[in-house]
Length: 119
Image (cartoon, rainbow, N blue to C red; front, top):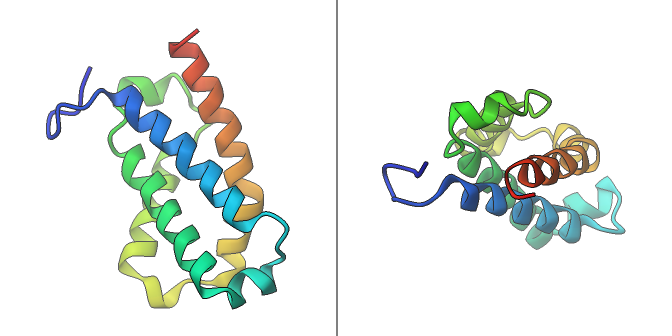
């Protein structure tokens, strides 16, 4: 199964999502929310990678998504849309919560999904 628009295999988008999650965690490692918000370069890089997680998620077929109901696919895409279309309205506390709480759980779930399809 491939992405009709690009001809790219959906598994590559799953790998991308894992890589973007790893970058988010790497960019924010050792920081608290105040330090994160104060570092414009890390902030922007992190937001961009969260956007890319959502973009890649749109390329994972519904059949595959259905095998991983623990992953909040719609919320991931909605977060991407909010970040892209409402950038000036980003709530820093919500963003930090996504980074510190949701991304580590998402990363584990994505790795488990990858293992399911790539034993």
